Every structure is written in structure tokens, then in C-alpha cells.
Length: 139
Image 1 (spheres, rainbow, N blue to C red):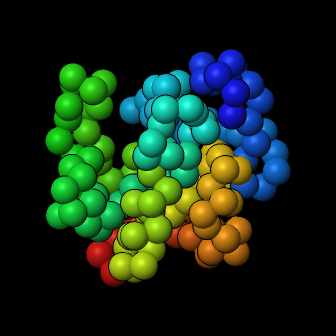
Image 2: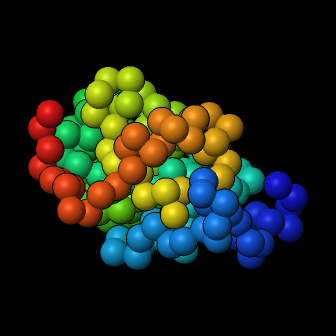
Image 3: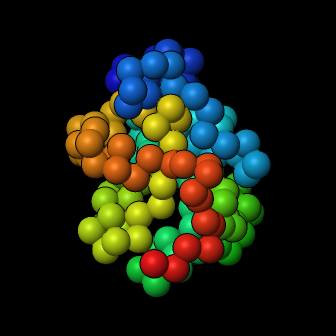
């Protein structure tokens, strides 16, 4: 990405090839806190995968030293609760997938850059289904 793109003004695509949809505004997510999982220069964690977090995933992440539950106002981070949509680090999602606790993925809001690390079929296996979603999922 060019330096001009660091502000998030360029058109970005999702993993389905369409326009990148917003991930979430309650709370507002994204490296730029603009609601989108943009591929941004300087974002070492690659917060480009839009997921609907579960209690199981939040506990898993906290137990590995990445507490996404506790608010951190100094980082403009409100703390997450099950059911929130959040732009996750691709690496953390992959770790969670290997452990069997990956939260579902909102494909329309997941940046196409994720395809450098995660196969499209694997993402589809974890596609968010609002009809079947249980934010308190324990298995």
C-alpha cells in the first residue's frame, strides 16, 4: 500500500471481491477507528479480519495475554462483549482457528488482504450466519 493510502481513503475490496463493507460502529472498530477492517501501513497486527466475537474467543484471547474484554480508554478501546463485531489480527484468528475457537467471520467486511494468510475456503467454513450465531458459544 502506498503512503497516500494510509489514511484509508482508497477503495478496498473484501474477500468476496466486492467493496469492503463496514465491520462495526458499536463499538467502532478498525485500526483507524472508522468501522472498517482496512489494510493500513503501520498496522503491524493486520487488523483486517471482521469477526463477531464469542465469549469463548474472548476468554481464549485473554488467556493468551490479549485482553479484549477490559476497556482501555487510552487506546480508544471500549472492551468487547460477545456479539460485538471487531477487526481482528489475522494471526490471532488463525491461532484461534487452530485451537477450535475461532469466531465467525463477516466476509463482506473482511479485507481481501487476509487471503495472503488464510485460504478462502477456510474463511467460508467460518462464515458468520446470524441465524445460527450463539455469542455465548462454549464448544
